[in-house]
Image (cartoon, rainbow, N blue to C red; front, side):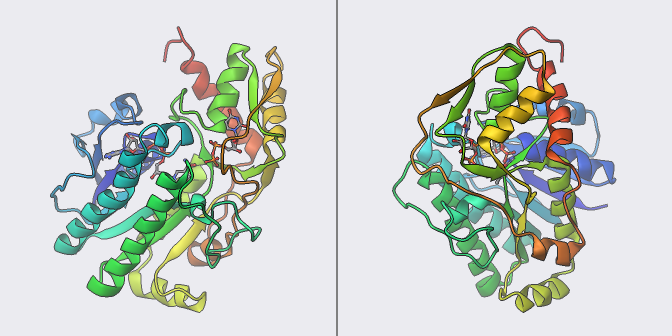
Length: 327
Ligand code: NAD
Ligand code: UDP
């Protein structure tokens, strides 16, 4: 039985990961300061004797003996990470430093959840792991983008200099149950708006694209990547030009934001919501689509859940989060 630490484990992705690791018979400790996470995501896990919750900020040092550390602690939605930008960049960088120091002292393996945001507004499409990105260092998204880029650098330097076993996963837009209803990201916004008959708010022209991944597909890839033996993994990555494992995980089916709005409305024909257009936020990337060749080769993985099917599961969940609904 393995012991896992999940920082940020009371959030959307972390709560799915915790359930998955418990289901396979392991011990799971979730550490979270509940900045954007919610205890309701992990209530169902609390009675499991193999589950522990620690209320703690990842920017403060911590101690514990774990086999594997999944580092997720960081607000991920633009409206939330921009609400407190200094805390955001600290969560990424100082939090990463604390995780790596613990891993160094205890010989734990680390999987860090990086992001497609490190590619910024990409000039290469689709984005392979070898692309260095196109980022504004002083924009409103920089606290997140640059924090995540610096965290990647810290990971590779702890690996090269101190031999810590690290793997970096660059996650592309992921959605599903346990997202906060006021999370502010596009899938949760559109579904909550459509369910309540509110205007569907498209920012900009709606011609910008994203590639949406259902959370179960992500959890499958992340857990497989964590289990890969270190040296065959390093060798496989070297063939792709890296000495450290860095892997895109996302669904390469690309949609415009307008298409997403229309798909949500088609799944909710009873909705009387109308599409409205609002200003495009600064530095909003125009296109995004992962090249997932490496993930496929490393762990025989490909996303299995089409957008319309994943949205149905998400809609069923968000119905339970409507004001007045019984969860
Ligand atoms: P989320 O906001 O639901 O989860 C983040 C969790 O981290 C929350 O529970 C929050 O309370 C916790 N947290 C934030 N700051 C913390 C701190 N200082 N100390 C301890 N806990 C802290 O978002 P999510 O979508 O579940 O994202 C999880 C991770 O995956 C994040 O690191 C995010 O950057 C990364 N990611 C997510 C996506 C996506 O599309 N969902 C895409 C790319 C990367
Ligand atoms: N978006 C939108 N309406 C919303 C929320 C977001 O049109 O209510 C757009 C946003 O401008 C961006 C895309 O949807 O172009 C994805 O936004 P999200 O915040 O989900 O993720 P990110 O921009 O970080 O990929």
